[in-house]
Image (cartoon, rainbow, N blue to C red; front, side, top):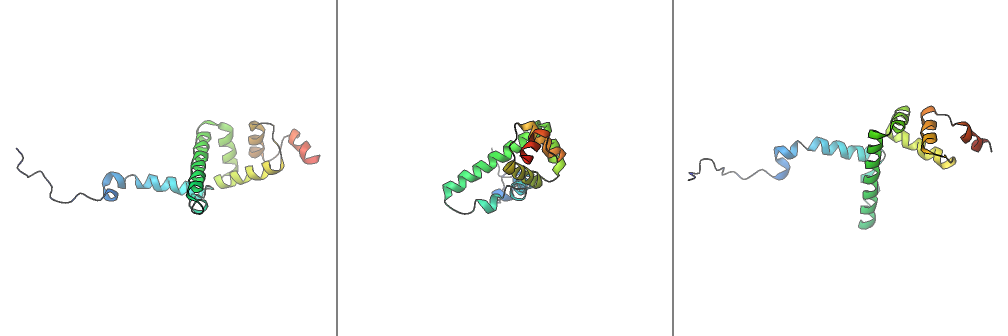
Length: 129
């Protein structure tokens, strides 16, 4: 039988104050900060407009973040190009800029151009012509 000695009479802690939830906070905050500060702009871009559109954009943004994470883990040229441009934000700025003016025949040529900061001969023909 229970004599009541092991039963706590205190109310349970609120969910956000529980130890197991507190231990998740740094990871949660770090992930959100990456999405917020490294070119994804979740808070700014998706706080306006119709709710369905905002949810669609947020989902697309999270999908892009997932794909970038996969590339960080599996694609050596991607990693080398990211390291060449240092900050993630600058890397994406470079991609946006050069793909606005030049057409690259394949992924390898695009990444090599980012790594070397110089286009290969077939791309230089586009610039000259």
